[in-house]
Image 1 (tube, helix red, strand yellow):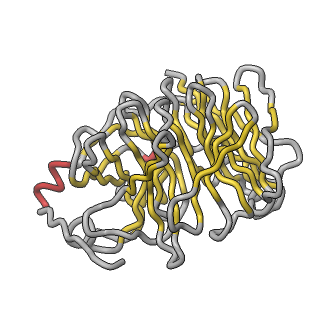
Image 2 (cartoon, rainbow, N blue to C red):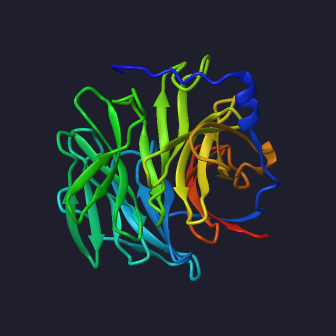
Length: 318
């Protein structure tokens, strides 16, 4: 990290920005397992019915991966085409027109390229100068969010406009490039983008801890950083109304899902919700959230006590 910006916020300002939220939605959880796969995860959602998923066939969830569509009404699982010669084909985001975005390669930083899949045909895109490019979500405008990384291992969250074949790197003042695991994932019709920055200690405010902070970038480019319950936070999807879904890593190093709404824009927000409102599918020891749709359905994966990874779709019941 070449430079560091200290944003000094005093204790009274931080206290004033902390937000408490009413009880979140209750959910019905549906588990999805791709036949024969060791690991299954669910990602982007179209029309609250079709959900993209990825299946891996090795116990550590690496190696060969294929993508599929899960129909939440019928329960049908339909495999998607694979990129010829690629070890892994990951279709992760989908918009209402049915355009899918993701990545393909051998799963390493030296070969993965961004991909579009539409009506059975693949096209590809690569961030200039990057070793790896991954698309993670696509809005109805066709713009894509994702990340690239370079030879030094720095991660660059981006917004890609395929119409003009242009990349807009998402930056936080004084903090570019970012270390590993900074990414953009989720975009709505207002041009609001969410993701996370992995920041060093003291980067956000005096004595702020290191690690992942969720971010929301509005259409004007203003960045809002946030954490949920003081935990390391990663945002993964945003609705038109501004509901944000993601996951936190709690004090016991366990990942759990959340849905929140920011009450303001700019600077840093410390959000507080009851631990009981964090998303935990029954039987899970760890939960990762990947997306949210306009009706509040949440997608992701959960790990059971035996270490098996299952996809899930959480449907609000209230």
